[in-house]
Length: 404
Image 1 (cartoon, rainbow, N blue to C red):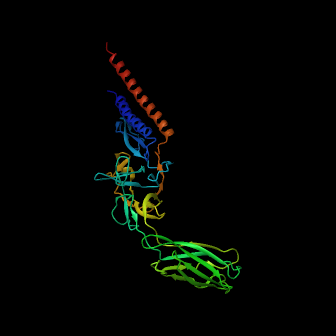
Image 2: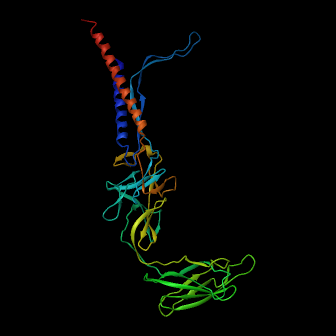
Image 3: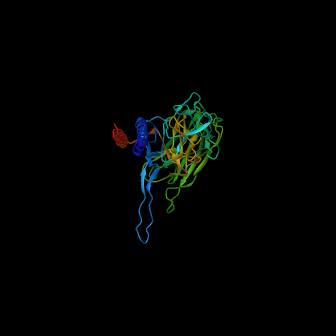
């Protein structure tokens, strides 16, 4: 049989594969985290019709005459270029900006994905749409140790944040240097006892001299304590506290059970209106976990009913020396391949891993214009090879018709 027919048959097979790959890319144009594939062709063995010869003193050299025997698919490569971002507004939608894969566990197997659409299951685990469990590090007392082994990330809704009593607080602002003696200014700070009960402390400032003010602190039961703050007049230190920068408000009337250190070091006495504000007050009421938010370094912050935030975990990302060597595992996931290398698992934003964006998803990186162009090329290649078969068949028919 003619060599051209066998070559054309190999061309049909190769272009059919290209059509299959292109069709799959187009089918996944809206698949979250999908990475487009490309088909690479190479020629097969060639038959030597005449060997080449080296030049000599009597004659020049000749090139070999070779007839190719067809084409084959050299490989199907995956492009891991960044896909476009699509904002969703969902707190459990995460997008990787840069290199890396989310680490998930499906049964006993660890698989990797770029698709960051996650949901909660019945016990608060973050899971993919097909049920794979998102992996990372859980926090202990608000601290995440990324040196430990990764585990399933769980959001413990309803978890209670223990109340803590207030031990320190501060007041910042300005006491007008032009205020008349006897002028009063006051502010309030909210403090908490060991049971998380909120109470108000009132700090009333009253000017007693050119650079001195009395500070009368009053608790909810009416217990009071008086302290004095004096402002400096030395060159370069004008308006800064000289004495009385801090004081301790102790138990009064048996209502407030513990001492609170009040810091006035950031108070000033300058010209202009008086203005006071509380600052740097510790302690908190009891709170329960309401929702989560994600930071760029992968930290999952718990938002509590007492308006405080505390880390509850951190997502892990994996990178590979050769991501093109990963084996597709279905459900937009990959598993470690023979030529991918082992995963380097770590925190986002470190070791070449990308950062995370919450409330967004990475869309497919399929370029429809390129895919449709490739579709036309594959179709024409298939048609051209089929014409070669037709021409070869006509030549064989002519040979058969030589004898009638």
